[in-house]
Length: 314
Image (cartoon, rainbow, N blue to C red; front, top):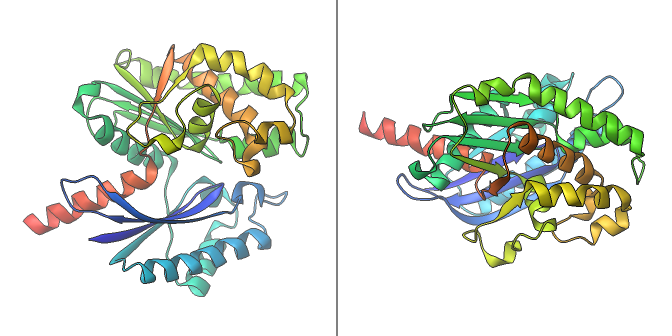
């Protein structure tokens, strides 16, 4: 069947059209996305602004048209931390449903971590053993670990790259040293607070990362470009990232935009994202993270296919 998966993230709205059936990898057929930057369209009270609501609604309406044009039998729509944490979340969802005709499910942080873990487990398979998964989004960081398809532990922290950029650096092109030091300390304290959840059962056999932030950092640190294909192994090494962080802090937005793998619209998120990634590897004593091309969207698709398979057999 052909499915449309509408992912409303804190940075981007993304409709992924896939051809999928049980027992096979979802095959991407078409992609339609647009920068929304919802994590930055928040007012002083934590509400999504009218500008953000309008951008989200317009994108959802366009996604419906694209899904219909591409022959999708169904469209699964979900929103993550920017909508989840907004004080006017219910109003935003009601407006999108009424104007665009899209019913967005709001995933909890734990569900984000769980579904991302499912996707990474299916990508690497059982040979990965006990698996640890990290995902830096625009609004939150998800961490999960376990030996099965469902993680033993899964949690979410408000350490997304866009959220941290807006909260700590504002519109400054270059964060000052004191701000970086304080942010680094806060990130590490927040991650370490629950680190025992992942470490108590033992050191992971394999550690993986997903998301645009991790992919960009890996590319900066020398990983293969996306044009080489999804099956090419990509790794983000802790020591290489540590060497790069002072250089990233010293660059302005224009210079960051010229680095491989960095989108001009995300230059302000590179430094906070790098600090979160380094903290994850330090606190969990991981010399490197393997970059997985599958993430939350694929997890949503795989769970839906599993549900269909169960229903068809009953």
